Length: 417
Length: 93
Image 1: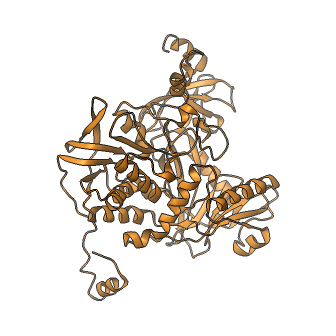
Image 2: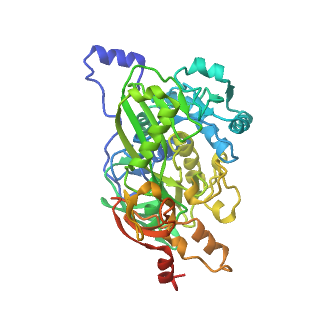
């Protein structure tokens, strides 16, 4: 079923009785050419681009819960391309371009809103760093624009400009950045993959990976064994556990990252705003809730919930930047499990096991990467060659020290990202 | 989550600095091969369940501590001084 304005009008006038399911609920077959472990945003996008760009059909996506039930359904929905390091920069640039064509491509409303993201700075030194980053973004071919405090006061009048501790010296806006409806991205890719013949198997937990003579043969699941010529692992925070089934130890620690939503308010924050003197970023959802988040809790965790000290820190940063937020009530908070790499950048690569592919290490920035990650990973699986924009995401960069993408300049060490 | 210090007892999480997994205490020989050092520095077991981490009681007694903890439930199970743990690691390289 194709969506269209006319179709919505027709359904509205006929009691909305004509809508059908967006995807099938197929029985798992005994063998596939490609098995993708993980039915989140990245896994579903990978399946979609394998089918669309490479014409492959005999593909299954195995999801242990329901589609899009992991980090794609529990993030702060920010889409941007303001990276600086070679390797990251071209990848996120490509991904943002895919975002811009996504809704037409998928024929699905992902509510992608290019409302602009403002990254604030609060000192002369931070201004220099921001200008440098902005120039790098412009050189990459994306947009960045320096804003003076005067321009910012007009754009975002409710910020605490004259704070004695954290005065706002200006900001950099990327106007093509913004937000999207996170669940809809998963659903759109699921629907697109399914309509191209991909089997989306839910409640199917992988319990083992079959390998013979250094070549992958298939997977063991709670629904039985599945033969596969190629197996792709795209399981975010669970990457170490699934790769462990193939005897691989990954450069990943799983950490918890918290996010928060307030009660629904009238429209007031029409940009994505990032504080420069504490880890805090905020946007407003179309339902009216202020969606904001902070930094990792900074200890390894699979708990999907954080602790109070980081909650307090985020609330303090919110109050420091935007005192009016004190009037809002936080409705809920949650934690997602982040697959953290030593340099804070991702991995899209082959493994030493023939036919076993790896897509992980998205740290706290996986949402904006969904289309680019799926596109590049599909290219790698289909052709066995790295896709140009993601060619820097090598697994061996930690061993060789070549091509590390340490955006924060803190060093490629686990506890620093 | 409140953490356990062998010197100070149960203390607020904010007093501690998280370093890494306690595998960090099993340091390879200086002349070990690159692959061994790579594995030591970067690769992790990253278990869902019981883990042992290295923490620094920064705002307390300044001791390096190995805390055994459950990463799924956040239960804190046990704590011992890293120096003592390191002695019991001898021969695990």
